[in-house]
Figure 1: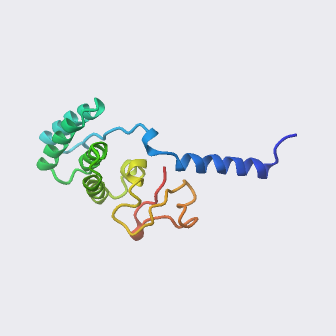
Figure 2: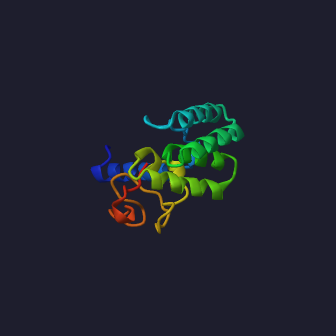
Figure 3: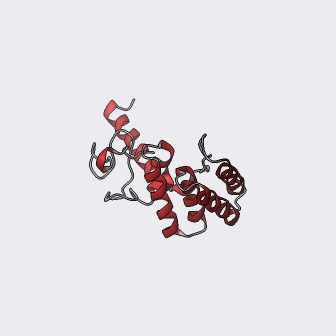
Length: 157
């Protein structure tokens, strides 16, 4: 006996919800490259940091990202990469601060704003409730209304 459309819809919604609530630790996260037009010294430091990050050398990656930020403070990608690194080093407070910096320097940057690891901190820098968003539903905190204040991009995975 085939499943009714209603039952099939419920099953699909359940699977989406389970996937949305699964641990962010199972997601492979990649460090971002510095954008074109960045200062060459900052680009080189980000590149070296990304190589260390990919190798799991968190302390070395941290040093390179901090150097890049010293050269060019406004590179959102570098703050994001440093936050990823600090998170892996267990330095959650510092990571949260750099996630906020990344989001502030790059409003609308889809990789940063929609990152599962960023979402773990629950709408960092806003008064949001920190519940995960489901694409098309606007967040679990209120169907259709899970966007950020001030017109910033809504959450999602």
